[in-house]
Image (cartoon, rainbow, N blue to C red):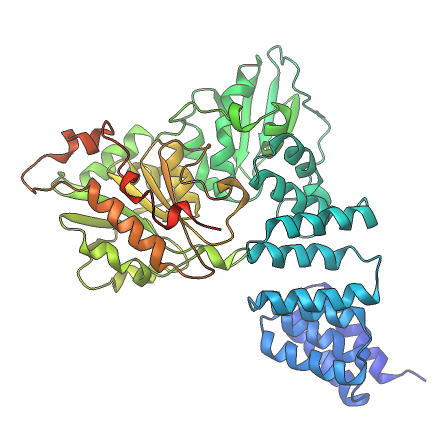
Length: 482
């Protein structure tokens, strides 16, 4: 006789693995009706509630299991994941520790525990978690991946790029491994062969690592780059790119290939040898003319703004336009929204006194964004693809970073080894934007002309010949983060 609870549970697991979360939850619920208070059913219910971002409900289910079966490592691991998603980092660490006490050879709980330590700014503790996880399970791709990012954040690039190679085995890596008849490039001279460089991850990653394309061409080959469609017109402006192909389209003939983000390891990149030819991206000329016509003659100090990023994979790097309210006190400045997608609607309701011009409805792709940036004096952005684009164009950029930054911005630095025109303003405590925004507003005020009748385009600040406008903040929060 078929057990209806097991049947519904099995079907729920299948649907859960396929990503059909609502139907999976319905199956789990029916299974629980057949077998109330069954921890084997409650555990996947908690997991699917977590995947549905219903974190408080998931915690309630986990508490129910703790009352029934307190010695479950899977319970404490899953509970730790939900606490981590709720930014309850100390509690998450405690839950992972309880899971590890029950399964001393587990590696995955150590990896997620390390992630929680990172969010608290405890990077040495995080590194110890990843290294211990690899001692237990040497082939744990998630531990290798987290260790790679930790090493890169510390500037240990050679070892970091080596660990970065494990990304293809990591669960949930956003780019799939590509199988081609052509061989992977090993860095040897190309002798006229056509090489395909295919982009990975998100827009910002492609923009950052596009600086390597001229180095590839210098090895004597023709560079074909495959990238998302919105980046094609922009990457075509790189003189050494023979052809740019939108992802998903039929590829032309090529003799050899390599993923874009494998290039730093291939070229042995260290902090001292990051390709620094700036700028390396330019807006197409016809787009420049179009945006010059849209914006008109220049009369005031122009500031581009980006305040929101995607909630996944990192919700902490985003803020609201209202968090930038101190910028409204900067006289003689007009702000241009560069915000598209999530959060763009906030441009219609800016903070009091902030003059925000929103022309983003005219943006088709990143070539348009680049042409708009070219009309501006400076870009202010959270960690976004636009920040990378402004930096790649050599545009002065003020970057707002969360307490636990992405690897590429390193720790404590006010500058970026990747973008010489960038100044960094960091959160001093988790989730608090007030102090970095105030410091940014002070620095931005120093760039504005003291008199609206003065043409600041020819002033020392405008030409970049003056002393660092951030120097008066030497004792401020930017120097004492973490």
